[in-house]
Length: 360
Image 1 (cartoon, rainbow, N blue to C red):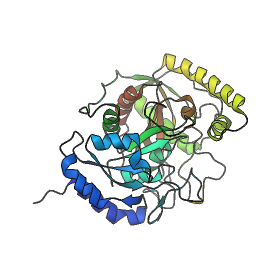
Image 2: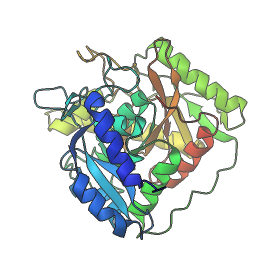
Image 3: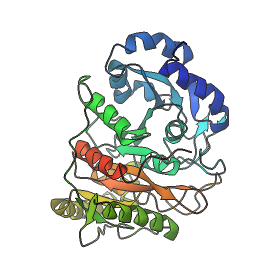
Image 4: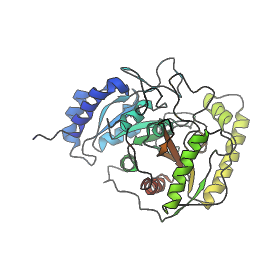
């Protein structure tokens, strides 16, 4: 019996399932299959992965993964022309759909990357996160997503808000990504398990967000399971920040209120520095809302709980926390101190033992 290669399997699933999911804009059949034999001799051993958008293949992370033996199989969907960047992905077959509920969006802007991983088309996909663009679609598709510390990896974003990230089915996939992207093709090793229970602060709204009560209840239930399992101990106190919306918009667009933006950013940095001086981990819902319909989010900012950490630069991840009653995935956001990306993955792995990955 002939063993089907991982790349061939990924391409077969893409050809079969993507016409319905619309996760890819391009699929590189010939190039991927031609590259696989030599890639198998390298540490990642021909691991198929996807890249975010048509420019993703030129990203620093993609180049490092290829050098380590990863095989790019295609470019995933991002918002199409004339669409709101926070909401949609436009694949080669049409509008990208959420693999759990086709009537809902997968989130954005790394829409296709999250769908491709959630539907088991690839094991991991690259992304970039300027306001939650990795964490939001990962949360809404029920997979793991990581935004790295701002500046840890090269980014073309001149505002400094965007950071490289990865979407994977589990923390282990993100560990492989980070190890090979950071180091010169060293054999991937898991971070040392942190001592348990992990001291953590839980904030349901960061002091300013209007969170869907059912979404918050799902996340609070996940946090309670972590506490009951001995993975986390909650410290007293909350994390109350100033609403970063106007500051993020001013810095991203070069708006006139730069002094106000710097004031909000500076105050939030002081509050977060004080928080991480007493705890290694902050827990919040990843989004204030569940996946919305393809007509758009209305007045709700899905970014409300994520873009604070693009302004501050902290690494942040999302784990599947559970589901709303109407079958929509909900994410638990984990945030650590600046530069603590590897320890953050260790803490996420500890949480994942209690909150295991889910499959649509």
